[in-house]
Amino acid sequence: MRSYAFTFCVSLFVAILLTPLVRKVAIWAGAVTTPRERDMHSRAVPRLGGVAIAAAFFAPLVALLLIDTSVAATLRAQPRLWIGLLAGGAAIGGLGVADDTIGVRARTKFAVQLCVAFFAYAMGFRIEAVSVPLLGVWEMGIFALPITALWIVGVVNAVNLIDGLDGLAAGVIFFAALTNFVIAVIGQQIFVSVVMAAIMGSMVGFLFYNFNPAHIFMGDSGSYFLGYLLATASLTGAMQKTSTAVSMLVPMVALGVPIFDTLFSMLRRTLERRNLFSADRGHVHHRLIDMGITHRRAVMLLYGVSVLLMVSAIAIALGRSWESGVALLVASVVLTGLIRFVGYFEYVRSKRRVLTRSHDSRVRVLRRLVPAFTAELAAPHSEEQLWSKLCTFAERAECSVMTLEVRSALRRWPANTTEPEPDRVVLARFPIAPDGRLEFGFHGELDLSPQADILLQLAADAVEAMLARQESLQAEAPLGLRPAKAGAWLASR
Image (cartoon, rainbow, N blue to C red; front, side, top):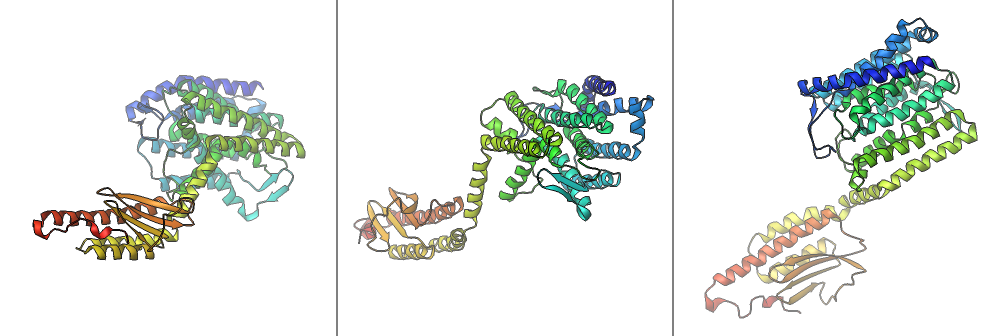
């Protein structure tokens, strides 16, 4: 335990000492995040905090390797794992530094992350089987490589996405590392214990400068580096139920908040038909802020969720079959409660409804009819021709009823139709100058999609423009040629 305490303290003090220096370097290098619409900060903040985090992580490990102790001997006995952890971490951290300073395209970042994940697999970080409580062990076979790569790349990006509030990512990573540390110490997994102790120390030291109001961000350099460490170290032994089976539920539950946020971000962007790598302001922390919760309270709330998931993950790893099942149920209830609290169910339903309506048959019909209808009304027409074209448009658009009223004169289609019942027909109502209205009614609709409403508005605008031109021509005509009563053609039949 003294070696673990030494690792934690050295990492802590190095992070405290180096972070202010890295902050100055970031400002000098121009690695500064300026406020954007989706950001929570209102002033420019330097990034590159990941450089200080990496230095704080490596410092105690190098010191331990130089000291001839049992811990150092155990670490030297696993050279492939150390090379995979340190070389892979340095590579993906370098990618983050490049993105923080000069910017890197999303496809390039994904390609580099994938290559690093393949390298980690070659160094021995593998998911060869999955142990699921109550279900037994599932062998991965030929899918071990893609599953391992998916896990590493997924965790790296999950940690990156959760880094949206001051201190949030660092705190969530601390609790995930603490989960792995407790399980590793109980299971006498020295490699993982040392790695997690170094991560925890660097996170506590970095939080002195990163908690709200933050003086520096960890940036992609920090989130990529830490995500890689958590993803790989969790596969080396702390979660092992047997020599070949890794219980993926434990690291998944420990990282429940960022993994949940990543999965929902993918779902949200799919429903909105946007690039999966595009940035937005719909993450869990954004929704908490939009609900009126203060910055610090939102962070503390997510800390609390992480603590509950940490306890559940430890119970899953160390408990018997039924105890693991209960812990998994608790973790599911916690995440479901978070989903309900921030209103994600309602959000998904609304997006699905809008997506379905935006591609329904009515919208497709209106997209075909409205341009031709507006083009026809651009030419001069008699009053009866205008009404005839309106009736034809309503019929082709599958309207149940159509009403036109101008100067208190009213006409309805079909003929002799009474006022539609509001609870049986949804009406799209548009004002027509002067003092008139144009309504399109549809049966069997709860409401009209925004796309259909906009298309019908364009049709109404064309009718209004036609009537305005007629009024203008009547006003310019000689007095003896004007009709006795303007708009008399609209008298009710």
